[in-house]
Image 1: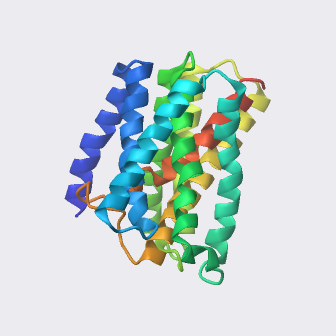
Image 2 (image 1 turned 45 degrees about the horizontal axis):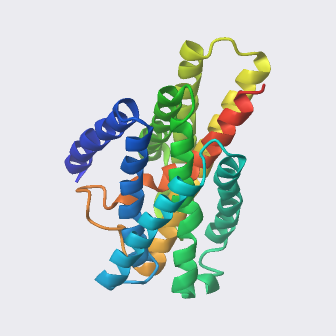
Length: 275
Protein backbone atom coordinates (compact mmCIF):
# COMPACT_ATOMS: atom_id res chain seq x y z
CA UNK A 1 0.00 0.00 0.00
CA UNK A 2 2.79 2.45 0.90
CA UNK A 3 4.60 1.66 -2.37
CA UNK A 4 1.38 2.30 -4.30
CA UNK A 5 0.94 5.63 -2.53
CA UNK A 6 4.51 6.68 -3.35
CA UNK A 7 4.23 5.68 -7.01
CA UNK A 8 0.89 7.45 -7.43
CA UNK A 9 2.23 10.58 -5.68
CA UNK A 10 5.26 10.57 -7.99
CA UNK A 11 2.84 10.74 -10.91
CA UNK A 12 0.30 13.19 -9.48
CA UNK A 13 2.72 15.82 -8.14
CA UNK A 14 4.62 16.34 -11.44
CA UNK A 15 1.29 16.35 -13.29
CA UNK A 16 -0.02 19.17 -11.11
CA UNK A 17 3.24 21.11 -11.40
CA UNK A 18 3.19 20.65 -15.18
CA UNK A 19 -0.30 22.15 -15.23
CA UNK A 20 0.92 25.10 -13.16
CA UNK A 21 4.09 25.77 -15.14
CA UNK A 22 3.15 24.81 -18.69
CA UNK A 23 -0.54 25.52 -19.21
CA UNK A 24 -1.88 28.95 -20.17
CA UNK A 25 -4.76 30.39 -18.16
CA UNK A 26 -7.43 28.81 -20.34
CA UNK A 27 -5.77 25.40 -20.31
CA UNK A 28 -5.29 25.58 -16.55
CA UNK A 29 -8.99 26.33 -16.07
CA UNK A 30 -9.88 23.22 -18.06
CA UNK A 31 -7.29 21.11 -16.22
CA UNK A 32 -8.57 22.07 -12.76
CA UNK A 33 -12.13 21.87 -14.06
CA UNK A 34 -11.65 18.22 -15.02
CA UNK A 35 -10.36 17.46 -11.52
CA UNK A 36 -13.40 19.18 -9.99
CA UNK A 37 -15.80 17.32 -12.30
CA UNK A 38 -14.31 13.96 -11.28
CA UNK A 39 -14.52 15.04 -7.64
CA UNK A 40 -18.21 15.91 -8.14
CA UNK A 41 -18.80 12.42 -9.55
CA UNK A 42 -17.32 11.01 -6.34
CA UNK A 43 -19.23 13.46 -4.15
CA UNK A 44 -22.58 12.17 -5.46
CA UNK A 45 -21.80 8.77 -3.98
CA UNK A 46 -20.74 10.27 -0.64
CA UNK A 47 -24.02 12.18 -0.54
CA UNK A 48 -25.95 8.94 -1.02
CA UNK A 49 -26.68 9.10 -4.75
CA UNK A 50 -25.32 5.72 -5.80
CA UNK A 51 -26.90 5.25 -9.21
CA UNK A 52 -24.49 5.72 -12.12
CA UNK A 53 -26.93 8.08 -13.87
CA UNK A 54 -27.12 10.35 -10.81
CA UNK A 55 -23.35 10.49 -10.44
CA UNK A 56 -22.77 11.21 -14.11
CA UNK A 57 -25.60 13.75 -14.03
CA UNK A 58 -23.96 15.66 -11.18
CA UNK A 59 -20.65 15.66 -13.04
CA UNK A 60 -22.39 17.13 -16.11
CA UNK A 61 -24.18 19.79 -14.03
CA UNK A 62 -20.83 20.68 -12.44
CA UNK A 63 -19.22 21.03 -15.86
CA UNK A 64 -21.96 23.41 -17.01
CA UNK A 65 -21.68 25.36 -13.76
CA UNK A 66 -17.96 25.90 -14.27
CA UNK A 67 -18.55 26.83 -17.90
CA UNK A 68 -21.13 29.40 -16.83
CA UNK A 69 -18.74 30.97 -14.31
CA UNK A 70 -16.03 31.06 -16.94
CA UNK A 71 -18.29 32.76 -19.49
CA UNK A 72 -20.24 35.25 -17.41
CA UNK A 73 -18.00 36.28 -14.53
CA UNK A 74 -14.60 37.93 -14.93
CA UNK A 75 -11.84 36.59 -12.72
CA UNK A 76 -10.72 40.18 -12.12
CA UNK A 77 -14.10 41.17 -10.70
CA UNK A 78 -14.70 41.84 -7.02
CA UNK A 79 -17.53 39.30 -7.00
CA UNK A 80 -15.15 36.52 -8.02
CA UNK A 81 -12.81 37.08 -5.10
CA UNK A 82 -15.72 37.58 -2.69
CA UNK A 83 -17.19 34.22 -3.72
CA UNK A 84 -13.85 32.55 -3.06
CA UNK A 85 -13.46 34.14 0.36
CA UNK A 86 -17.08 33.47 1.32
CA UNK A 87 -16.20 29.76 1.36
CA UNK A 88 -14.30 30.45 4.59
CA UNK A 89 -17.65 31.04 6.29
CA UNK A 90 -18.74 27.60 5.17
CA UNK A 91 -15.57 26.06 6.59
CA UNK A 92 -16.31 27.62 9.98
CA UNK A 93 -19.72 25.95 9.90
CA UNK A 94 -18.12 22.70 8.73
CA UNK A 95 -15.79 22.87 11.72
CA UNK A 96 -18.80 22.96 14.02
CA UNK A 97 -20.22 19.92 12.22
CA UNK A 98 -16.97 18.00 12.69
CA UNK A 99 -16.78 18.99 16.37
CA UNK A 100 -20.36 17.90 17.09
CA UNK A 101 -20.14 14.59 15.22
CA UNK A 102 -21.57 12.06 16.10
CA UNK A 103 -23.74 13.90 18.66
CA UNK A 104 -25.46 16.04 16.03
CA UNK A 105 -26.06 14.25 12.74
CA UNK A 106 -29.53 15.44 11.68
CA UNK A 107 -28.19 17.30 8.67
CA UNK A 108 -26.47 14.13 7.47
CA UNK A 109 -29.85 12.46 6.93
CA UNK A 110 -30.53 14.73 3.94
CA UNK A 111 -28.79 13.57 0.73
CA UNK A 112 -29.75 16.87 -0.93
CA UNK A 113 -28.10 18.96 1.79
CA UNK A 114 -24.95 16.83 1.60
CA UNK A 115 -25.01 17.39 -2.14
CA UNK A 116 -25.39 21.17 -1.81
CA UNK A 117 -22.38 21.58 0.48
CA UNK A 118 -20.30 20.46 -2.48
CA UNK A 119 -20.81 23.92 -4.01
CA UNK A 120 -18.65 25.97 -1.61
CA UNK A 121 -16.11 23.14 -1.34
CA UNK A 122 -15.40 22.43 -5.00
CA UNK A 123 -16.60 25.77 -6.37
CA UNK A 124 -14.20 27.78 -4.22
CA UNK A 125 -11.38 25.38 -5.07
CA UNK A 126 -11.78 25.97 -8.80
CA UNK A 127 -12.37 29.70 -8.49
CA UNK A 128 -9.49 30.15 -6.03
CA UNK A 129 -6.95 28.29 -8.15
CA UNK A 130 -8.10 30.12 -11.29
CA UNK A 131 -7.72 33.45 -9.47
CA UNK A 132 -4.21 32.57 -8.32
CA UNK A 133 -3.33 31.57 -11.90
CA UNK A 134 -4.42 35.03 -13.07
CA UNK A 135 -2.01 36.83 -10.71
CA UNK A 136 1.34 38.23 -11.93
CA UNK A 137 3.25 35.78 -9.69
CA UNK A 138 0.95 32.86 -10.48
CA UNK A 139 3.63 30.18 -10.75
CA UNK A 140 5.14 31.14 -7.39
CA UNK A 141 1.75 31.36 -5.66
CA UNK A 142 0.38 28.06 -6.95
CA UNK A 143 3.64 26.22 -6.27
CA UNK A 144 3.70 27.73 -2.79
CA UNK A 145 0.16 26.55 -2.10
CA UNK A 146 0.88 23.02 -3.31
CA UNK A 147 4.08 22.80 -1.25
CA UNK A 148 2.21 24.01 1.83
CA UNK A 149 -0.41 21.27 1.51
CA UNK A 150 2.04 18.56 0.47
CA UNK A 151 4.49 19.60 3.20
CA UNK A 152 1.73 19.43 5.79
CA UNK A 153 0.79 15.94 4.60
CA UNK A 154 4.38 14.69 4.84
CA UNK A 155 5.06 16.41 8.18
CA UNK A 156 1.81 15.08 9.64
CA UNK A 157 2.60 11.53 8.53
CA UNK A 158 6.02 11.35 10.17
CA UNK A 159 5.11 13.37 13.29
CA UNK A 160 1.99 11.30 13.76
CA UNK A 161 3.89 8.03 13.53
CA UNK A 162 6.58 9.24 15.92
CA UNK A 163 4.54 11.12 18.52
CA UNK A 164 0.89 10.47 17.74
CA UNK A 165 -0.60 9.36 21.04
CA UNK A 166 -3.42 11.91 21.37
CA UNK A 167 -6.16 11.55 18.78
CA UNK A 168 -7.45 14.64 17.00
CA UNK A 169 -11.02 13.58 16.18
CA UNK A 170 -11.37 9.84 16.85
CA UNK A 171 -15.09 9.76 16.00
CA UNK A 172 -14.39 11.20 12.55
CA UNK A 173 -10.90 9.99 11.62
CA UNK A 174 -9.20 7.68 14.15
CA UNK A 175 -5.83 7.87 12.41
CA UNK A 176 -5.31 11.61 12.81
CA UNK A 177 -3.45 12.96 15.84
CA UNK A 178 -2.59 16.33 17.33
CA UNK A 179 1.09 15.53 16.82
CA UNK A 180 0.37 15.13 13.11
CA UNK A 181 -1.32 18.55 13.01
CA UNK A 182 1.64 20.22 14.73
CA UNK A 183 4.17 18.38 12.58
CA UNK A 184 2.36 19.40 9.40
CA UNK A 185 2.09 22.98 10.59
CA UNK A 186 5.79 23.26 11.43
CA UNK A 187 6.77 21.75 8.08
CA UNK A 188 4.55 24.12 6.14
CA UNK A 189 5.67 27.19 8.07
CA UNK A 190 9.26 26.28 7.20
CA UNK A 191 8.21 25.98 3.55
CA UNK A 192 6.67 29.47 3.68
CA UNK A 193 9.71 30.97 5.41
CA UNK A 194 12.08 29.52 2.81
CA UNK A 195 9.93 30.65 -0.13
CA UNK A 196 9.43 34.15 1.31
CA UNK A 197 13.14 34.43 2.16
CA UNK A 198 14.14 33.62 -1.42
CA UNK A 199 11.39 35.29 -3.44
CA UNK A 200 9.89 37.92 -1.13
CA UNK A 201 12.87 39.23 0.89
CA UNK A 202 11.69 42.82 1.42
CA UNK A 203 9.33 41.99 4.27
CA UNK A 204 8.90 44.01 7.45
CA UNK A 205 8.83 42.31 10.84
CA UNK A 206 5.05 42.64 10.77
CA UNK A 207 5.00 40.94 7.37
CA UNK A 208 7.00 37.99 8.67
CA UNK A 209 4.70 37.60 11.66
CA UNK A 210 1.66 37.59 9.38
CA UNK A 211 3.40 35.12 7.10
CA UNK A 212 3.87 32.62 9.94
CA UNK A 213 0.40 33.12 11.43
CA UNK A 214 -1.47 32.85 8.16
CA UNK A 215 0.61 29.90 6.96
CA UNK A 216 -0.40 28.13 10.16
CA UNK A 217 -4.02 29.12 9.47
CA UNK A 218 -3.84 27.62 5.97
CA UNK A 219 -2.71 24.29 7.40
CA UNK A 220 -5.24 24.38 10.26
CA UNK A 221 -8.11 24.83 7.84
CA UNK A 222 -6.65 22.22 5.47
CA UNK A 223 -6.92 19.71 8.32
CA UNK A 224 -10.58 20.68 8.62
CA UNK A 225 -11.05 19.94 4.91
CA UNK A 226 -9.62 16.47 5.45
CA UNK A 227 -11.80 15.87 8.52
CA UNK A 228 -14.97 17.08 6.80
CA UNK A 229 -14.53 14.63 3.94
CA UNK A 230 -13.78 11.88 6.46
CA UNK A 231 -17.03 12.75 8.25
CA UNK A 232 -19.02 12.35 5.03
CA UNK A 233 -17.32 9.05 4.22
CA UNK A 234 -17.84 7.69 7.73
CA UNK A 235 -21.51 8.63 7.60
CA UNK A 236 -21.79 6.97 4.19
CA UNK A 237 -19.94 3.86 5.40
CA UNK A 238 -17.11 3.98 2.85
CA UNK A 239 -13.35 4.15 3.31
CA UNK A 240 -12.41 6.08 0.15
CA UNK A 241 -14.27 8.46 -2.13
CA UNK A 242 -13.51 6.10 -5.04
CA UNK A 243 -10.74 3.84 -6.31
CA UNK A 244 -9.49 6.05 -9.13
CA UNK A 245 -6.03 6.54 -7.60
CA UNK A 246 -4.21 3.36 -6.52
CA UNK A 247 -3.10 3.58 -2.90
CA UNK A 248 -4.76 6.97 -2.41
CA UNK A 249 -8.45 6.25 -2.94
CA UNK A 250 -10.20 8.88 -5.02
CA UNK A 251 -9.74 12.42 -6.26
CA UNK A 252 -11.49 13.85 -3.19
CA UNK A 253 -9.14 11.91 -0.92
CA UNK A 254 -6.27 13.83 -2.51
CA UNK A 255 -7.78 17.30 -2.75
CA UNK A 256 -9.87 17.51 0.44
CA UNK A 257 -7.17 19.51 2.25
CA UNK A 258 -6.58 21.69 -0.81
CA UNK A 259 -10.30 22.53 -1.02
CA UNK A 260 -10.19 24.21 2.38
CA UNK A 261 -6.65 25.57 2.08
CA UNK A 262 -7.18 27.41 -1.22
CA UNK A 263 -9.58 30.18 -0.05
CA UNK A 264 -7.47 30.72 3.07
CA UNK A 265 -4.33 30.99 0.95
CA UNK A 266 -6.06 33.55 -1.26
CA UNK A 267 -6.82 35.55 1.89
CA UNK A 268 -3.20 35.11 3.01
CA UNK A 269 -1.92 36.61 -0.22
CA UNK A 270 -4.36 39.50 0.05
CA UNK A 271 -3.16 40.32 3.55
CA UNK A 272 0.55 39.90 2.75
CA UNK A 273 0.17 42.23 -0.23
CA UNK A 274 -0.81 45.13 1.99
CA UNK A 275 1.36 44.69 5.14
